[in-house]
Image (cartoon, rainbow, N blue to C red; front, side, top):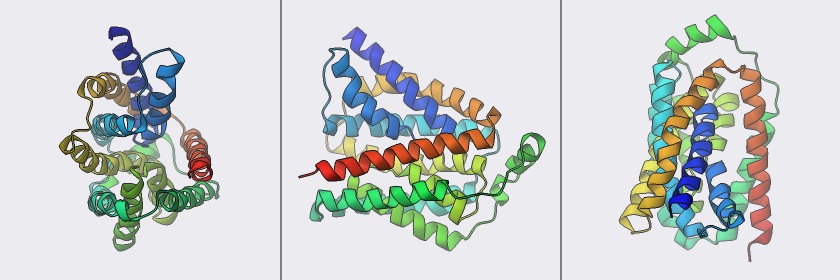
Length: 268
């Protein structure tokens, strides 16, 4: 059992690092790691239901840790967080309740379509962002960033609703939407998206706990690694070139889109 928990802590470390680095919450990486790594090491296997439960706890903890770190560096916009996070969290809860009436394959297909659109958005040419001192000055003005607040709330609610239906926070879709549709700078998008994920993961986590699905020993082992790793990831994020972060995000979003389409094709 000790070895098992140690492996889970290392997996949480990986998820937390990428959460802080790219603002993607960590579930994109955590779910496949939890499903496939333990069997490879001949350790107890987790089913998808258990993985979905513990990943909400891990994502909440790593998003909280990463959001605090990014906020200290001035890269979390409270208006973005409020206008997108609250609608996304509320719609996600509604979507989770509504999902019982919708075919699972239809849900996956809709989410796959949106993720494919997100991939194409990330491949569009974008305005070059200032590095170093210019970026630092932009961080100070994170709360003053301009964006269409009505459109932001509408898009966030839509993404949250669909994400709630299939049990995914949709952070990898919030990133291209924030950058390309709302025009929010990359670094502020990364920090603010973590705040949005924090709110959506919280409502999901409460649902999992209330329904008795949480596996506490496994969840705490994941958090033990993810919290410090998210802090480290956020530090690296602010030192990495914007272009590097952009292409790392593009690769992960494209890979996630491909995986969802494969799930659609495999679904009965």
